[in-house]
Image 1 (cartoon, helix red, strand yellow):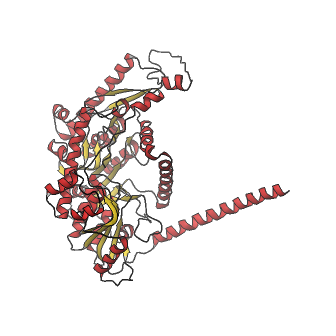
Image 2: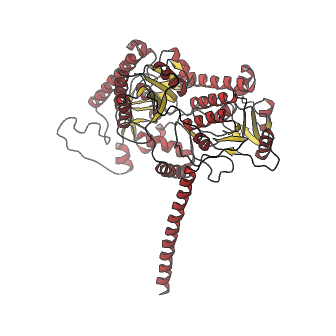
Length: 588
């Protein structure tokens, strides 16, 4: 009886715990929902706090990103920060008389150089009002310092560090792993620079891949060095020497070489903020976060019939209708809808993509081409718009990219894996097959490819490459021969792409929207509408929470092998012929 009593007690306890957990969960959601509906009030002498440390810059997050942090926020902040919301907040702060300055935390921000440049330009515009920007962090990564250098004053923790020693792009090679487990990759490609397959067949970069990586990486680094030198009032030569020789090795070196103004603790930085605001020592610092600041911005021209559709295409390009990527069905539908809407006078496709399926790219290309027949179509390239990302951009009337955008990579490849050794010898699994034709089990992974199969696939790859070339030639008004000279899968920066006719104008999303507005002769009478439409904030909150928890658990379990796991996961999505970047480029 005692045993049964204990069991019953455990069951009752679990039941009560579950009920309380559910009540607590929905109570918290209720609090968050109520917070989302609150009316934001702004005090005089307020500081906009942009806490981007540890956050990933993306094109857009939910408009109701309730936890976008500021100091004192108990929830710690979102894992992501949306460029659109951030820029809206900074612009509202620029014109709002109650905002006296910005307090910036960017230390270990996760972002590409082009997005950092775009945000940097917004902060530069804010400074034109005479309001201050003050930056502080315990440690700065290369990107975090690049963004923070726009500030009037930069402070660093006395035990802190700055990673300012040039850029690096590291590739993970899987050839040895495949050999150990008994997997034999078979590669089909066109172009000496189409090196997306190299991680599966080589142990280090090919000479061609190393050449192109050095070429675009140096250009991106020079853009960063110049911007930092201008902001810190240093000569370009001295800044290049500091960067090249990693002269900032200790916190004190950052002061010596004028990368920061002073070494201080955060409480001392708060004291500096109080002094700027004319507050007493014990006064609270009035702050507002980006979400609340952005909510104060009033939408313009709500009734205007001159509408510009900005379609945000971010992620890999895949077939079907999938969230979180550029799926062909979904984005073709969005472009088609914008084409048929008479109130939409121009379309801007904002591309942030390393590429993907060439079939999915072709589906989106078709809709872009059809849209171009009836209204102006522009492309704004973000951090990366390469391979398939360039394919879908090619029909645009005008292509705009940042100087440090990664683009080009006009080429395709196919990848197939022979797992016969793995399943037969390693796992003891055998297969047998009955066919009705010579190629009925075409590309069966349980055996080597025949020469006939290899010939068929290679011919398909070559035909796909010629199609890609023709799409670019048609869209850019170039001859196929001229396109091939800058193709072969080679990657370029925005600067380099403009010199070669692949990009028309250097600038960000706002530059592109301005060009579209001038084209339709709208003056100031136009409204920008972003697509695809966002999901309700609660649904998005649950998705983000689930994704963040899963990612953190995997990172904790796999440690340094998490990147390898992510690469292997991506291989599973390589269906059909691919138009992808030479590799996943991570600049650090």
